[in-house]
Image 1 (cartoon, rainbow, N blue to C red):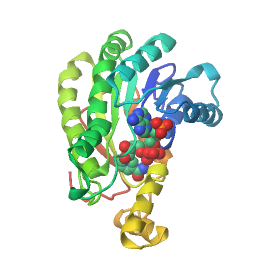
Image 2 (cartoon, rainbow, N blue to C red):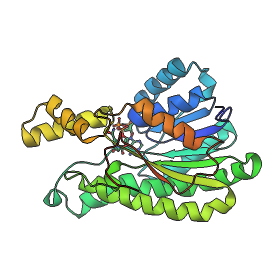
Image 3 (tube, helix red, strand yellow):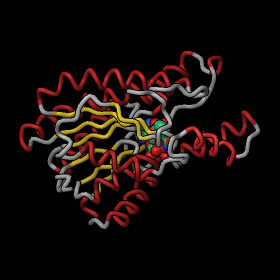
Image 4 (cartoon, rainbow, N blue to C red):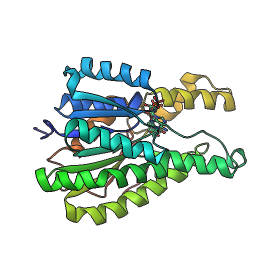
Length: 270
Ligand SMILES: NC(=O)c1ccc[n+]([C@@H]2O[C@H](COP(=O)([O-])OP(=O)(O)OC[C@H]3O[C@@H](n4cnc5c(N)ncnc54)[C@H](OP(=O)(O)O)[C@@H]3O)[C@@H](O)[C@H]2O)c1
């Protein structure tokens, strides 16, 4: 299938590793011009090399934009830089690192605020500042997409991930509301809810559970795998393929959807 992504311009937040990097690579492979964002210039430089190598694309097709997504001014500047570089913006992928783990007594008010800033407020601000460009792309090319990374924790809370469970559910509400408003402009808005997928974040979660329970890493991973219908963990490329489809031209009539990519981990009928 032709995804219609040739020369589309993309901003991928949280893209120096893991799910964001995999998504940026898949989109570059499909012909997009990709701006990757994270807090670290050296990690971005490595990610850019990795995308160019894995997707087989020229240096001018991958831009790095240093930006901490909890800072609204940095978001504004990063979107402006992307538009200056590529001449517009068709696709926004919102993403950031995962928040700290913990139980109810582990966070004070500032801890809660920081978690919500990282995963909820950053998403809202990325969308707010990208929207004028996305509206322009929808008018000009009839192709504008927002895809948000949340977590299966939005549907099925995970006990030590209070901050994530709470922030992601907020993002789901925001996404559905936004999809209603910008549908008339021709912009689709969808969320992807990854299950347990092999990234640096997952390694960190494994170590956290090992410290809490004394289990081995293999036991922790086997427990998650056993809970998924497919009896295994996910790969970043599997998540990335879903991003590429939701960002594509053929996905034009899909909006307001919350799509788990979790190997059947969540047990909801709808
Ligand atoms: N992997 C899973 O199983 C899984 C499942 C469900 C949900 N998720 C969620 O999906 C998101 C991505 O996870 P991942 O597994 O890909 O994690 P990861 O490998 O740790 O990658 C996180 C990325 O976000 C960037 N980042 C972190 N904080 C940032 C900030 N404030 N501003 C800009 N960039 C920031 C990091 O880059 P720098 O450090 O260079 O800034 C890195 O590129 C997380 O929110 C995670 O909780 C993951």
